[in-house]
Length: 129
Image (cartoon, rainbow, N blue to C red):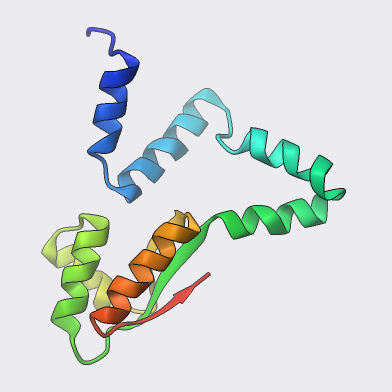
């Protein structure tokens, strides 16, 4: 297999959904026994002055978008779930039917807020955790 350049790798990653990219990062961390957030977490205790504050700051960096209820417009919610997650129709419908359920996990605040707006616009009830 030919070795990919940095640009080629970035192009490949750009094509992944957020969930696929998150799964890749987890697999990468397990395979190479590293943590992608280590430099940020290591800098936080020195700046914050305590491990407890660093843990709280770390939790605020990642959010879970949780679908509490689909509301009256279930089809619109399913469409939004599919757009956000790249799930198939059946998987998205199952996710919406099994609410409360996480739609996106471990995403940044901006992505979580955007997803919340889209899903609430479709009629869903959403919470960020």
